Image (cartoon, rainbow, N blue to C red; front, side, top):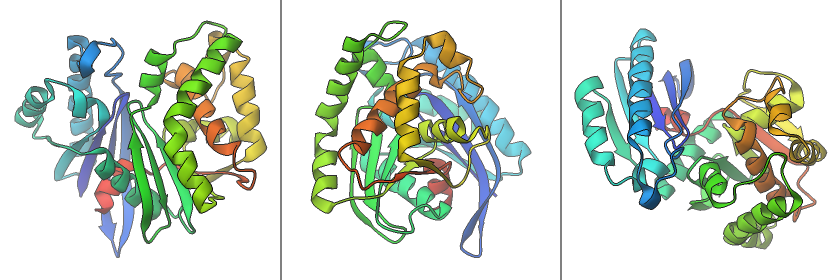
Length: 296
């Protein structure tokens, strides 16, 4: 039994599982909130408090992996760790303390691992634009379950969006316009590719898409496969923009981590939906990078 810890910007995510007859069977999953960019230090630096949260999370997740029966485990470091000046020192400490060897992956490698996980979920039965919204970066993959046609990783994750365009409570119209402009500038190559390829299907993996599915369905447990119709995506975007932070926090399906970030994420999804009227909605899956690493 193997375990993978996806070391993201906002959360560290554990998956324990095994491949049997070419299919992935998950035995245990867990998530720890770390918010590596919470203190918003310049030049990619991570604050001592954030390193402490990260270390505590690794200890919990490695312990959980052992209890779930894992005999080996590895870590996958993504956007925040890629840029952090002292990441190598911390990674060495994690290997020494918990035998967790962490592999830093490039944006392209991250996108490929996400694709592997989503393909294994059954969500890519036909050509689609796969979107994974992280805290540090967002991965876009034009693919089906057999092959990748095009992919791009862009440093426009939700933690970066929050730092770049903070907003009031409740959100003001000018602030919404500023976020939309910030997103549009960064989405330009993705929209250009999607228009040239006449993409008509969107797939969203984990994170914000799990929350979107829960808001739509009232099912609090993430689904391996789900679907949210186009009009529901746009309705929830409009509703969340009209709510105060307290009102968003009170929603049963809203995790505390996503009270603010979900609004940024849905504005990004809105920017992908509006130019493509043929897209009927978003297929969602809870499988992503950690499952992809287990498959690989």
